[in-house]
Length: 162
Ligand code: FES
Ligand code: FES
Image (cartoon, rainbow, N blue to C red; front, side, top):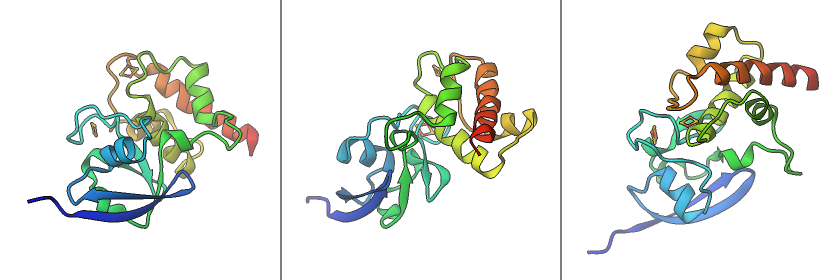
C-alpha cells in the first residue's frame, strides 16, 4: 500500500514553500530533501546533538524530532535564512567566524540558530547564561570556549548595531 502524502505549506526563510510529505516525514528531512536546504545538518537523529536546530516561529526546535506535517502553516528559519537579503552575515555568523568558533562546522548551523534565538531573548547574557543557552548543542571539535566567546562577541556586535 502506498503511503498517503500530505500537502503542507511553510514559510521558510521568508518564502512560502509547499511540499508533499508522508505523515512521518521529519522536518529535518523535509528541509533537506523536499526543499533542498541542506544547511540544516542531521547528526544523531534522536534529539541529542542539536545539529538539526532550526527556528520554528522564532523558537529553537530540533527538526529531527519534529514531523513536517505538524508545522504546516508555520514559519521556519534555517541557517540559510540568518544572513541579510544581500548575503551579509548576521552578527552571530560574523562573531563565529571572527572568534574561530568552528572547526569541521558540522554542528555550526545548529549553534548559529540557537545563539540567534538566545541573543534575541537575552541581548547581554552572562557567561553562565551563554553556557546554559548552548547546552543543548554538542560540538565534537572546539571544546566550546570559542563558541562561548563568539556568543559574547555577537552580543557586542548586535549592541553596536542597535
Ligand atoms: S540530529 Fe537532531 S538532535 Fe541530533
Ligand atoms: S566544529 Fe566540528 S562538531 Fe563542532
